[in-house]
Length: 356
Image (tube, rainbow, N blue to C red; front, side):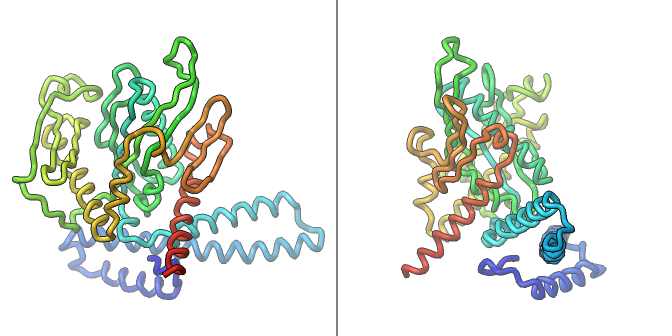
């Protein structure tokens, strides 16, 4: 969709025309996986073309409004509102232009793991899960829960979910890393200030058209009794599944479904996604970056801090972006951080290219 950060409207219109012709072929659905991918491409290109055309219309409207303003015939509040809408469209397009990697277009599999600290960090992990759930709703994306392990007293021990939407993985990759929270703990009878950590891992969801070679002999599959939500049936049978990929040491698990078979399929989906991401990292010679993301969940490794006390602020340590309204961020308003991170990657690449 995006070539070198440039969107060619005429070129994309031609691509869309060819894809529509292909989709009208009587034998189009003979290969259902290929057909689904074509329809997804059509949908994305249609939305991008509509966005650019909308921007053009807004630009024309702004010129007319300014002419009215010069003649004293336009209300300042109307101009301000139109400028805000115009800016939001530009920001959205700017973000899309940074997403050019093959994995960016895919859905995202996201895992949240609490750090040391017991109930306090588990509660923080659940707060992050709520934050991303709200962001998904605001983006009109879809969230499918894959695995959810309830905390002993409060919060969660572990959660894995899939975010489905246009460029979901490209947007969510900005959230990968360690998130730090500072607050007066509601679980501390002495009302002391606590610092908690939770890590967020993001992988591109692997579709059936992408082949990830996994030897059955490389897998160790364990079943165990599930805990938490799911009803009595879940808790009375060994329906939970844990899969270990022996060569890489990668572990995936699922206990959210009532059926062991469904849990195994979901665990395999997570494993394939993580192995696929590992291969992408190897191809791009980013093994060091991958290891950096596996740092201890603690001091010095966080990408973002959320301070509730003694003042309120959310700060991204990679981009220095700051927001004072912490409740707004926890309610899913993350675009300012996602945008600044994605733009910082582009700036870093530009600087690197200039030095070469």
